[in-house]
Image (cartoon, rainbow, N blue to C red; front, side, top):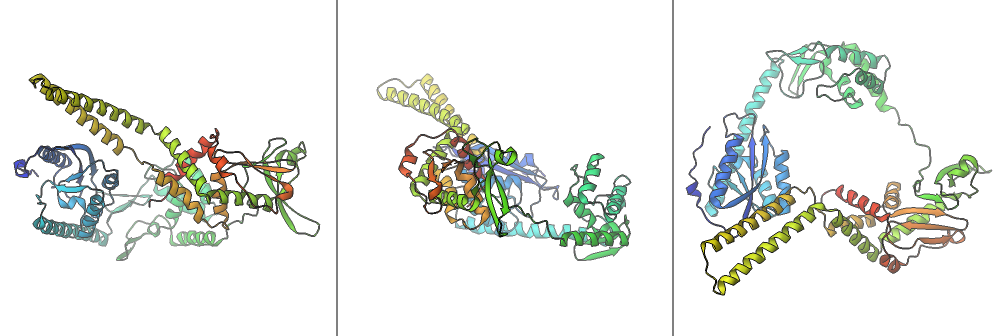
Length: 536
């Protein structure tokens, strides 16, 4: 529908500082009469122009439901508020920001806490106590409309379900819809479903079935390969026996054409339950957490985990040079697993508990991140250009103050410089908006400090500590050399002292030593791990 808007009613002003704004537009497939995406964008741009705003980005969700705020572009926009690159979000109406008071209020709060306000094009809400009341009314209307729309849609689905017709959701593999939206057997995929049930009940595994289907070039309705999970969903779907269900409200025997018999379906369920109840195979090999970290100082080969029993039958575990194990070409003696692992863990734990070392690693990771951040280099270059322009503007102003006539040419030059400065600021904002995640030193330190809270009795926690902080361990004739993933000399310990000494570090020497080449790999790995951290 066409909506006439008088933009003079909004009032116009010339901003002393540029106000950056973004537009959010949504078009629901359920409401074909509402303002189109193009109409919303055009109206929002005219609104922004009347207010003197600079539009730096558009977020658009096409044919998305308004019943909740789980919309990709909408969520990205709310997330981008934290980058503080825009001050205003322009939307068509209140209902674009959520369909009930709780959603709208919460979403507006997420924007507001980052200094971003929401403005509506088609609903002129004044910034006053009266405006707060008006906005509450509009939010209530949006919620009412959303509930009414949802009830109408659900009522339509329920009526279809009572007749055995399609009532939304994914069409099961093996079926398709006729002109009246009744389920019918798909002649191409229906026999495939029957073959899946027949193969499974005759003893084939789901892996074998998937391999044959994929090898024959068959794909799911979404164009994906068949997987164990996908096959399990097919085998557990009662609809293939002819039973039509809609939620917990409707169950129609014979409501769908049957592809398999009840007996075949029950046989498949029995086998599924049996496989689920079967205990998983137990991993009997000891967990050697220094694998790929431990090396023989004589030949340079890796040392691998081994286990055996002594004359009394007691089990023992140790690390052995792989060359010695393979062909006895190295005479390196084995080393007990418990002794070496315990000492390495103590060393790594002592490292992360040292504030000075943590700060050193934080600074080193930060320096690496900045060096790799090409976007920051672009921003720095743009800021340098802005500084040059501001210097040129300052020189013109000084000349005018000194008595130089302010001619049309001078005015034109000033406008040109100011226009370039505005364009550069906008370019910086666009770069920062398109940067998916920006680290700070606090992010890095928070990541490192998490290691202090680990349960060091937990094997997974021990492995994580070793993987991140230990680079390599060399086992020699009478000593062990332990290299950490940051600058400094290796820690050394004699075999004779292994059971009695606690780890001792020269932290000041470590922190003042130049970074080794392999540290770059460590810092890159830490950076990747930080990006995987849950949001605080």
